[in-house]
Figure (cartoon, rainbow, N blue to C red):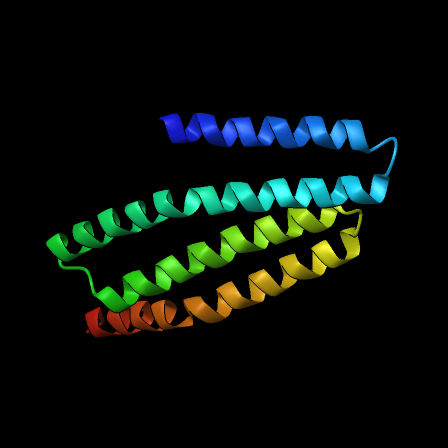
Length: 129
């Protein structure tokens, strides 16, 4: 829980710096916002690793195919990275680039989900008489 409070502290500190610098140097304020965001993501990496480890243990216990689990993790990762990158672009005032990142994320998620869809369809076809 203390890690969460540190993350909130970094966010609030970044926000205060952003609000102080923005009227003086708007270009520098964007870099402060982006830097704060990157620091927060770095702080979350240990938590993400712990969650993935717990999920991996759970998946191994219930006997789900590890390849399908890996694909699902990649899809979730692409979703988070897409959202983060798109938000950074929006914060920097470039919504056009943010929209293209979202499009690319959707295409990659579709591409990554193809093996799961194929396996599901094969399973359905195998159940048919």
